[in-house]
Image (tube, rainbow, N blue to C red):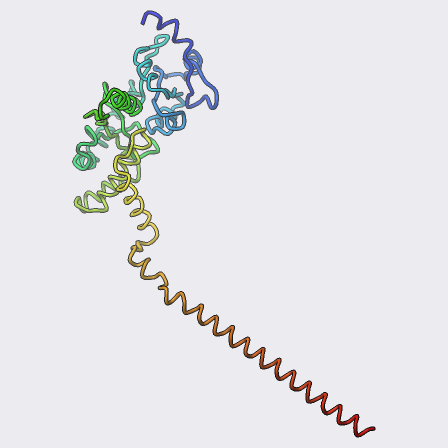
Length: 309
């Protein structure tokens, strides 16, 4: 802690704007656009995974750079750093990320209306995902994604959770850390998928298709936010179900029934063989006829020669 000010300028990170090069906190602060008040970062298992996080969408749309903390200890270091040159260091994947300190009353009213309008979506998802998420909130932090998973103020990122599980196993534990994966699900009310869920809930809340689509949205949000999908078999089944709907709803039974049976596959082969045999017979007959004609011609010519002599 005493050496924090001396160490901070030496730190290097990849970021959403640095490409293949590392950047420093000093360069980050110098490049901050007007109006940006904090230094933002996200954690992830590598640069590519960190860059996939949906929580950076709103930041990127404003031109804000986001640092990628790709090592488990980076998270501890960032939390210890707290600020740099009077700029707070903020985890963008935490709940209640506030980018609009100066929101006017009209904007606040609009946000409240959206929360009320999609309240039943949040309630449905909370019931469906009980045990998987702490709660579901209607958020304005997303632009392109329908949903994202974030942690509470004192929660650990998925990268840190994996690190802690590995430490538990290494020390003789079973890696089971109850409650660690209880993330908060943020939902984008402006996304077509969320609007579609809202319509489906109003029509039939018990629909199996509704449940599958909601669970699939959660699975994708978990993966892009750095979490692991627990039941890959069910996830694969939901994806295949969606693909099945996309190609016209053809069931496996229909696909099987439309496939040729072994007998049906053999019949064309047998027919082909018969045709080939017929052709061979025709050729043999033609050859034989031709040979006979030549023999007769030769015999006639021989008789003529004898008479002439």
